[in-house]
Length: 340
Image (cartoon, rainbow, N blue to C red):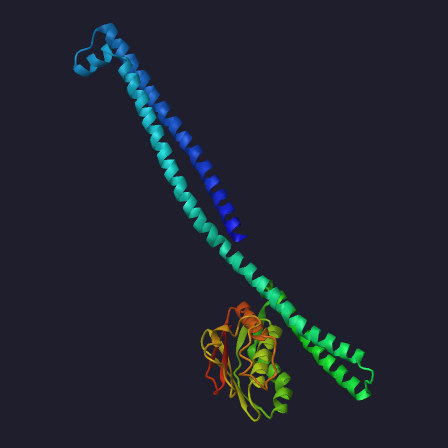
């Protein structure tokens, strides 16, 4: 599809530039020929005067007087040469324009093609992720309907399982909506905020999860400010803390530290968890990417959207997010934001 669009765009570029170039060449050709023709007429009049006055001394004058057709032949030859050169130059330029147009058309369509491919992949992955909890719901309900001796305890277990699936489905939809709706237009609403406030609220929100696993959250924060959206930064820190808790074993430790320089604010969230394999690190911010399930056996799996959403939010704040990890020794996620 994009190859056809590239060819069409190339043809349009080439056609437009060719029309403009041919029009300019035609104007230049007409002006040049008109100037030559005026000189030709002037010379022809002088030759006629030479014939009338008898001033035909000199070999060139004598040749022109004796053969006036020679001047006309020279004029036509010059005209043909100019026309031929213009055609050759224009042909060469059109070929070069076509090649360059094809290259530039490819560069023009490249981000559109990448965006389209990402959109298709997003829809495909989202459909797959939505299908999983829905299938689980359908199967459990179907089994319950076919059971002739469904006890109250069994019915409660099924309802509990269905509730968990619906809760997961709700979380997935919320993350998908957040990922789709987060746009650059929101930057117009950015205000000066305290990064400490967003981080403190995120720690408070995730403390119950950490408490369930006897995980200690240590914090060292400074009073730093950035321009942004407090809720969005809060969501980012919740995602990072939730991941840290999820992949840190019981009685582990999570350290949150905030440092600042003259122009930057850095928030580091370090855990003592299972770490990330080296091969997975370049992909962990990709949508729906999840590491090998063998690595996370016994851990509650997410949908692979959180880190992608966190990165998008940080990028909207003109910041960056990086990760350092060693398998078996934990991970450190660092969010860098512009200071104001």
